[in-house]
Length: 314
Ligand code: PSU
Ligand code: MN
Image (cartoon, rainbow, N blue to C red; front, side, top):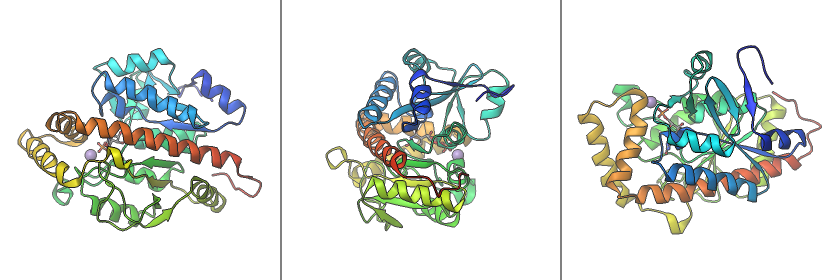
């Protein structure tokens, strides 16, 4: 759909899939530009797209390029975005001004949900969502991703939230906002690099089909807001929480010392963890994103197969 100022460009494979009514999975781009170093960022982005295809869905990596909202990137657009240094980080608050001024930006979980919903995509895969930062009681730093989950009807598959955040507060806020936190296949919420967080599962589902059905029931209700599906990192790729803890402590101390604030905080901490772990955090991050892409594709495929007759679209 194209209006006067909000121009959307669909990649050829996404346009084709939507025309044929085949399942599509949205992917964010901040993980590429602000979440991983080059060249692992572009290699991972390509592998994530390929994983979605192999699981029977079509990947739609979302970004704003020169003022145009792209739903799906052509291979050369992805390669170019991954190497650019001047890319803005766009959340819900920033995306309209970036489009209005012809800018280029990568979308966070929040902005990717906004764009996916606009493009008619119901399922989205990422690594980790933003959340309540440690010390939020004085900094008030709470990611816009949480509010977005409360208002935009997209199912987001993530490996939980990183332990750089305050996980108990993050899940308390999600509960307050009425966001379903579904844990795939275990009784504890996963903590990104680690399978365990010590936090009990709010809702456990073991099948992609069940998650797709829950999405459809929400639509039939006309409930605004999405679902957060937390998918534990595969066992063989896991880093124990006790190994990660000192890296996090050091990264947080560095951020504090350097006065890092606002939207710089998450990218700064991710970069410091990569350095402090000598790349181990990145290896695990890649494994969990691929795992999430696979599950998101299964959910999208199952959703596409459900009869929709009784659904009230929202
Ligand atoms: N957490 C990760 N990797 C990421 C991000 C978060 O483990 O790449 C990115 C996502 O794009 C997320 C954003 O939406 O950071 C959250 O940023 P903030 O905390 O500034 O809202
Ligand atoms: Mn923040």
